Length: 386
Image 1 (cartoon, rainbow, N blue to C red):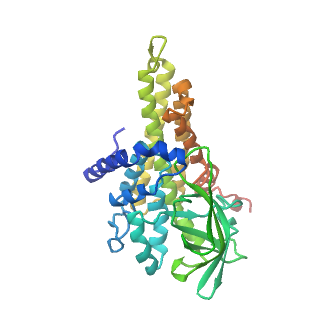
Image 2 (cartoon, one colour; image 1 turned 180 degrees about the horizontal axis):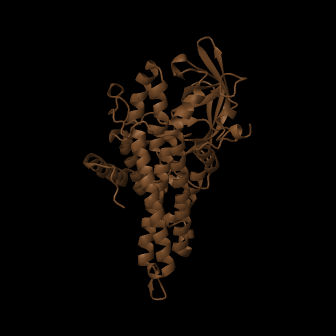
Image 3 (cartoon, rainbow, N blue to C red; image 1 turned 60 degrees about the vertical axis):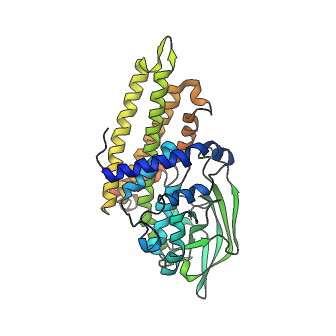
């Protein structure tokens, strides 16, 4: 389906981004998957190309481009010609805005130029062994000591955990208040900050995912993001964009799987004719095409709403829920249409299938998305229960 949200500038940017991904990502994906992480150099090269932190104001080294459609293009071309696990957008648009909107002037001047250049790779450390989607359940603690804060605790499943040079860390600052959480920027080299191993995963092999440990890590006041007792509300503020990012990745991933499968069923023959000639194949492809087009249209509309500052938490949850479910449906059907080849690692569809499984879990599980949506339409269990 022809998409109406992009203009000539966007298409020129897409062409340049596509060429970058074809040259600097696509040839290295197999190596990255084998080593369990991408090379840091790809972030530096992306920075040189102007693909990182595009929203960052010019005074801090960025282009000052807030239009999310440019980031959407980066996401789509990364998925098509790179790999779903190359988390450039997590660095740029998921974590970076915490620093841009909540950071001190000192922190922004020092860190944002390195974010734009790719010299410092960002990650966000929320998830703990006992606290995933339930952000308010965080156990890591930050205690004020003079002007500084001292952090103790651990985090797990942290994306960019090995390559990352700075992390937005959520820690409890008010022990007796469920939402009493602060946000702090912990940087590589701070005493007491350590990384665990690169965690082995079912999919997303190019993505370095690690445990992080904090033992009396002293954070200076300029590295505190906003009010140290109201970080929970900062997290909630940025989660809508995180879920939109996920939705853009998921539907782009489904589209690539569809295209690969179309190519396969037109080339592969059974009983003397292409697999695509069988009614079962044609009907499956028709159903997938419909689901992808409908979902892409909704996601694109959410992008436009986000650009206007009108994307609600509920709509973002709907986009993330629908896109991740469609992605899962498409991946399963595409592997089936590939037959035995779909189970072989040498075929891209095989690892796309395993990469996609986490989409219904991270950035808020499907169950959490349904809860948010239900509350948004007036079905709040707490209020209905009296």
